[in-house]
Length: 268
Ligand code: CIR
Image (tube, rainbow, N blue to C red):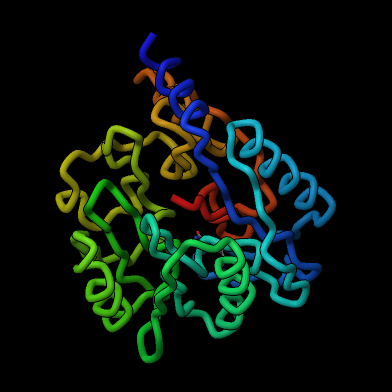
């Protein structure tokens, strides 16, 4: 059928699908926490879950490339916050948490080594975390969060305007990052955990998920999404809409307010 056709075309085109990842730091358990209490993190299990996450991407045709390890930066595994990709343009962020700010150095190095990408930067006093940026076609929703400020949004808007993107700022008070509260299906429907969404009316189509972790999907192909194993009812709901759902257990990262999106950056 057409679903299989899509995947075959993808492979035939010989396009290289790359995702950046970063191995968990040895002090992962000390990561920042904003909205939840600290629960002990099982480091060994976290390493295993990270391996499985990378293997799942690989199995779905995304070659994983490791950004140089930052063993002393507790939150560095959450690489999504350090760079946002817009086709040929990579925007290196300026993470809003002091403890995370230097994470961008290794990411920028890796992006440079990938080659073929124009590199721009968000700079002080602007702050922006990649977890606050949700792309839906040519619309770029950006969470105005504890981590992303007005100046960061202004800079991103100015960088993207020449590329034909519209930046839509989204007030966010109930979750750490925009993508903790909403992401989007391949068809552009914004899905989310309603208690975390201040303004569902900002989205063209909004579909509420039955679980908190169900708010986050990673689009792997036009017919496949990656989700956390801690949102089985949301996964079933999305499968029932005609999508293939691949699940991974990321419990140890969820204890640190990480979700399925933040452990990689898909270069696209
Ligand atoms: C932090 O507070 O920055 C980390 N503990 C979690 C970051 C998760 N990133 C994301 O959702 N994009």
